[in-house]
Length: 450
Ligand code: SF4
Image (cartoon, rainbow, N blue to C red; front, side, top):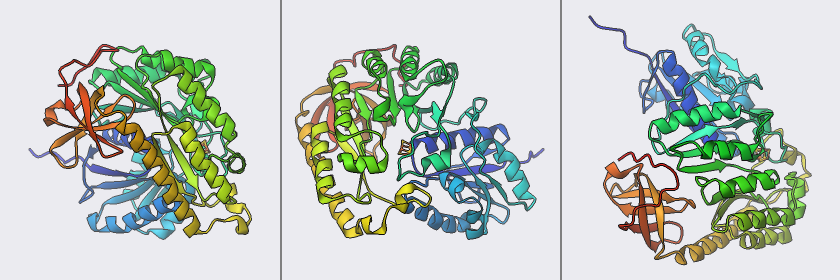
C-alpha cells in the first residue's frame, strides 16, 4: 500500500541571526503541519525566502534570487517571501513577482500553513500585522546546528536610530518570559548542544516585567549543560552595572561582546540618534573591560552617514583604536526608504566614492589592529569548541571563548567537542592551531557530543 508523500518545504535565509532563528521556527511550525524540510529548492512544494531589509543591496539580492527560483519550481510549487523585506514591501512584492503567492512579516509565521493552503486554491496572501504578544512559545524550532542554539529572547526594537528600518519591520520591543527562555534552553542542552546565543535587537534591554537581562544571564548561565553563553546585539546604553556584573560573574558567559558603535563622532552619533556620545561609548567599553579583563570586543560601523565630515570619520578611526576592537563589520550607509536619514538635506549625502574610500581606510585600520592583537596571541593555549568541517574539507573550524576562529587538523567526528589548542599561526584574522594534551578546563558540566 503506498502512502501519500508528505509535502516538502525549502527555506532560504538572508540577513541576521534573528532570521536564522525565525527560519528554524518556520520549519518547526510547518513540520507540525506535515511538511518535510528539504535542503535545496529543486521541486520543493513550498519555497520560502526569509529576507532582510537592512540594506538596499540585501533587498536587490533577494529580488534577483526570486527570479532565479522560478526555474526550480514545479507547476504547483508555492513561493513565499517572509521576514523584514516582506513586512516593508507587502503588496508591492506581489506586484513585482507574479510567481510569489505569499508575503508574510515576522509576526505572521503562525499563519503560514493556512496561507499556503489558500495559495494552493489560487489565493495570494499577505500577513504583515504586528502582534506584540507573539513569541511562538508553542512552536518547536527545527534546529540544524548541533553546536550552538540561537534563542530569541526579545523581538522588535524601541530605539529609533535614524538609519534603521528594523523598528518598521519588526515593530515594538517585547521580551519573552524568563521561564520560557529557561525551558527552551533546557530542551536544547538535553540534545547535546552546549553553546547558547541569546538574540534580540537590543538584547541587553531585555525585561519581562519582573526580570532584566542580568537575571536572564544568571538564570541561563546556571542551567546544567550550558558551557558557553553569548548574546547579540547589545546596545551600549543598556549595559547597566547589574548586567555587566552578571556577565563577569556567570562562568559560562564568554569573554566576548559584540558592541555596535556605528560611529566614533559624537556629532554623527547624535544625527544617527544612537543616544550616546563618543565619550559615553568609550566609557561603556572601559566599564566592560574593568569587569571582564580578558574581554574581546567586536563592533559594527557605518561610514558615509549624511553629513559625516573628514573630521568625523577620523574620529571613528581613533575610536576603533581607543576601544581596541578585534574585528568590525563595516558598511557604507544605505538609505532605507521611510527612515529619517533619507529626509536629511540632499547636500549632506556623501558621494559614493568618498564613502567607498573611507570604508577601505577603516577596513585597513581594523585589519592592522586585529593582526597586531592576533600575532601577540601566538603560542597561547586556549579552549576551542569545534564547530564544523572547514571549507577545504581537511581542517576543522572552531572558536575560542573570545570569538577567535581557529583551524585545526582533525576528523569530522570531533565536531561539537571542546579541546585545548595551541595557536601556532595566524593569517592576521584567523588562527591555525594544534591540539595539546591538557584537557579543556571544565567551567560547567560538559556535554561532549563525540
Ligand atoms: S537599536 Fe537602532 S540599529 Fe539597532 S535595531 Fe534598533 S533602531 Fe535599528
